[in-house]
Length: 402
Ligand code: CTP
Image (cartoon, rainbow, N blue to C red; front, top):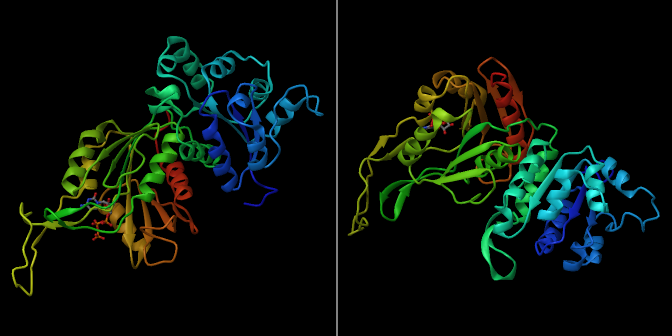
């Protein structure tokens, strides 16, 4: 990202112990190429030093509404921002935002901006579940503010509960997704994503599988959640557990994935079948480890797995959008179009896994998006999260309007 064109993020830091984690949020955002201006509340400075934020930020940390040479720092900060991130957002700061207070630089900047706002609350669980905080949080949501829900875990003073600020990488991932020019409103939409390669057991220690990393599925799930969707992720690989807005079901084999997705499909607005499902499984799975016992050959019989996607299409809800993925090594678009028709999909995302920068394990992908209504988009090599943005934007455009 060119420094001059970098989107500007104002990072507002509230006064809570999680302020130490916002140093890491700052570092991640700067490393991603954003121009980040830290703003610390008076209470934040009791937990962390402004020098740290000045040293890591794109500009020195701002701390006061009045001590600056700029007579109206809050309006300049608010106006120039492309995104404002509040991390940690204390119960008090959340109340101020909900009620429009502006008695310090942080709250005044938040009131003076028209940029999207991402709020990452952090507090003790008694406070997080308090009706006043619940009311304030729903006011924030109704005002279009993005809330990165806290998770369960260790809290200040050795306590444990629900109120621990989301991890820095999660907040940075939300920030990136919300800044995307392709963002669509997925609030109150339910999205099913499958990810990873299935493993078909031969015996307790061996399996038939593939090298899918699940990264494209994870990118789809995390962007969709940041855009407001309620995401069901059915995955063979660990990851994204605790990511706000995503409920994870871990599976191993194609038949487990089949069962888990069939239970969910009738309630989904969008289905994104990014998993690499094994087409075949061993006809028998031994309960004991197979012994070599001097053999020079071993033949494993395989039988076909059910086509999960075909079944999901049969049970889909009216008006939902079903998207398939195709990893090919030749005749990419021809194969993708054939699968789109054969499986009666609304859209297919095809990639040629033999191309540099595309495929299973990397962080980038090169895809072609083909829709049933005849549109085709050939995307260049992009990060998997950017590919996810294009896929979600297109899938959203195929939903019937509400
Ligand atoms: N798929 C599925 N169930 C299967 C196999 C594949 O749901 N048993 C899904 C994949 O998740 C993907 C799409 O179908 O979204 C296309 O997968 P692919 O393996 O490319 O398609 P196949 O129909 O198996 O064709 P091929 O002969 O190329 O393997």
